Structure formats: C-alpha cells, structure tokens
Image: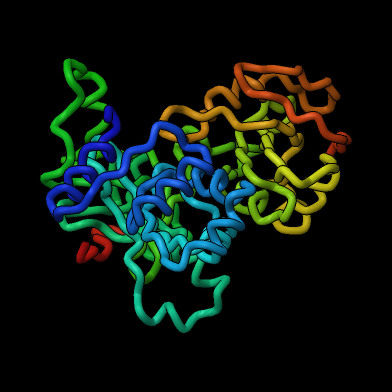
Length: 356
C-alpha cells in the first residue's frame, strides 16, 4: 500500500459501496480465478500484467467460460498498442491513465471519444495508448520547453517534444525533509515530471520517453519507447526494453533486451534487427539484441531500466561477447542468436480536461 494507486482506488471502490478483491500473487491462475469467483467488474494493473494474463494456458479457458467484460485502468508504463488489441479480445476493456504519487495518483486519463469508434481498429488502439487529458483535480497540464529558461509551451502538432508539467491542488507541496529535491522538481509553480511528451492537435498528451531514457546517438535523439513499440509489434516478442549502450564513435546507441513468447522455439538477433530495419530509420535500429527469460521489474511492475543500462555497459559495439548466465538478477534467455554489425510558440496552450 506504499504506492499512491493503492490508496486512491481502494478508497474509491469502498466509497461507492463496492468490494475490493486483494490478491497475493499476480500469477495468471490466481487472477483469472479471482475474476471468476468474485465476478470482478473493474481492476487496476500495470501493462506488464497483460502479458502475464495473455501468455498463459488459462487465457483460453477464460475466453470460453467468461461472458462478461472487465473494465481495466492501466498505468505505470505506456501500454503497447499491439497488446491492447489482444487483451480486448479476451474481454478486458482498457482505459489508459498516467500519474504519479507526487500528483496523488492519476493526473491524465485517455478519455474515449464516441467518434473514435468509427475509426479502423489499428488507429483506435494507437489512440487508446496515449496518456490523454487532465483529471478534474489538476488545474493545468502542459508540455513545455524546460531545457532553457523560457518555459514555453510546445506547439500542439503531435511532433514538438517537451517536458510534461503539472500544477494544481492535488500536486504535492514537496519531498519530506529534502529541500534540494523539492527545488529541483518545481519551476515557476509547475511540477516537472521528468517525462518527455507531445501534445496532439486534439489536446491529448502522449509520452515519448523519460528524459533520462533518451538515447543520444551521433547528435540524434532517440526515444527508447518508439523503438520498443516496433519491437512489441513483432509476433515473436512478448516484452522488450531499450536502453543506451556505449558506442566508441556515436557516444550512445540503442541496445534492446527482448523476452520472446513461450511458444517460440527459435529467434535470432539478425531476425529482430531486420524487422527493426524495415520499420524505423536506420539510426534508431538497435546495435545489439540481448534475449532474456524475463526483464527485471520493481514491486509495481515497472521495468528497471537502471539495471538494464548496467548490463548494456558490459557490451562494446563491434565486439561479440557471450551473454552471461545471470546479470544483476535478470536471466539470460537461451536461444539461437547471431550478431550483425550495422555499420516557437510563446502563448501557453493548456490541453483539454477530462470529465472523469
């Protein structure tokens, strides 16, 4: 219950006279049984839980025996659009939210618009994966150029990148007994989230990356989440994470960590790199793919990229190094692999606000 989501949503259910169903394990068997036994109508989870639910033998039984849908609020990490389409077919109706403990839980919600129902399925899932518009408890949400001193709002074109900033009555006053961290987290009354994003013409925000996860390769800024989206769309990939790997010439270059689906017997590094090369600019293609049995995650289900960056520093571009059987608690996936070397607006624009 140390996580803010554990406070706010359990209280909300109780306030509406509902029943909270608590589970001790996030195994597929336990979750599907709880849904069936208690007639669960709503649930909250990180996107990683979808992989657990989808890639299990209980998934088919659930589809056959359950004749109702479960409303799911997901957050903590951007859900891959390809995964959202799969869980929808299993009876899970997903709403994507974005927030943090510093903002007392959800700050943005991807509120669905009726006109989107007429769009092609592929476009609908892309819209659903966006972070959305602000909840009522926040007075303002914006995306600003925070690298300089001007704090200008970025254009609403879905392309101009800036830092997501928040202010309102639900934003914290500061960090307990840490004046330095508090001062660094605020500027001109805005809370700096540390997330890089864009604002689309309809006012909906979309995260592109954490500032610390941006990969700067030869002067080009590479959003790790953009590379991860492509990896997630490959039919053999269950999970993927991309971090910076040192490069003698370019400074940094992408390194991909991949977990393949359980039924996949053979997958090669060349195969993954070829798929990436066909679906993204060449400078964004990872220079190395590391296959793992599982990605390191914290207690809330977020991928621990710090550990992956430590692992990536073990590799040097241009040199083939055998993957260790265990690095920092992450298990290496034993699979066939080959290594291939590849060679301004000054007016504030506050996005829309959700009715939720």
